[in-house]
Length: 485
Image (tube, rainbow, N blue to C red; front, side):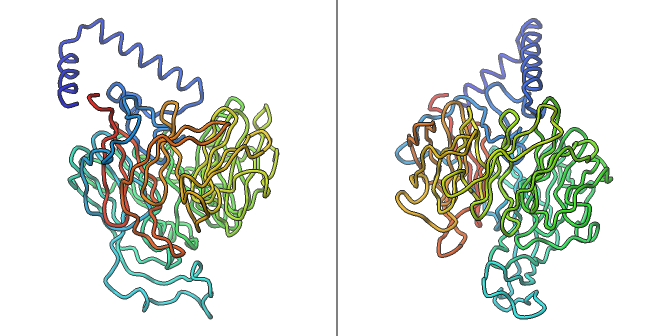
């Protein structure tokens, strides 16, 4: 691999003017095709070395869970893939992002005080259900920048951040860093938003949502990954009239605010081209709504209310249809009008229709939806009517349900990489006819205790023909390149 890279660099240094112009022409053609098809790919991804791409934000360059690299192995070696490096890390759910030879990830450094003795944050008797018990837990949050080549920590930025969220899940930051050029944007679990220089960790600007927007932190923390759209940074915040807020990404100046949901939820914002123009999709506690990303004006709204405001999985789009899913068997398909300014609920999920996944984002391909549902049941439905085509526990427990079991879905070429919460990575074929497992490897140990299970709930990143994944103790990088490639 190293020899090949050196050979490629040598060719680049001596290639002719005509060949350079041909490469530029091909890349411009790719950019045109990307824009015309509705994809919004950042230049840092488009202009990467041939065949390799960065993973600069949640779900990759276009927030679509597609890993666009070639030269990836077809199956894992018997002893597993090669471990490139591993680096100690604090706890957290935040997934890593990869850009320009650097890896960014957030973590939490808890204080040494006994959590059992922490102050309860309830006026009266606390809830009996530990999933709703809030405590004041001292600690710090960090953004950590590592060298992609060897995992060495280049710099970190930390801030005091006592947690007021539900104590059982006060593990660390939820949101994945968003990288845009020479800046990285981070959102902590207590509503601390930072714009930071990627080179040295210097803070350019910051906002505290609790102070700026009088935000009451949701039970499970602020979790929506920040979104860059052009010169705008879009965040899910909360509060009256400020469920969604847009900032000038360069200065942090507020540009617009919109919506007044009863709770902001945990779902990340996403921009998709629907009916011929960009629509900002926001799914919160009360509805799925579409906004003009430049102004915040609402195009349409469809009431879909997840239990406990647990709108988590990102809405996924194919054509003019949008699929959402959430806790307590909430799922459905929304159809947008040809004009793009109206929408209706095409069908609503039930015990026999839809996949009500909680902690993962569904994947749509050719009119089929793939996702992990309750208890770890992974399945496939038709987008047109929600009809179930098949389901299996194979990617999770194998033959039975498991509380809060989860699988993340990423496509690479014509097959899929599935990351389950046991720290396993699975290569599989998914189609209308069923699930076919090709290979499986254990890559990292689960460390977080939930409902009697030990698991890992952090979404991995895929870049440089490698996978980057973390638990509450470390971050690891494995090579997934084909042998001799």
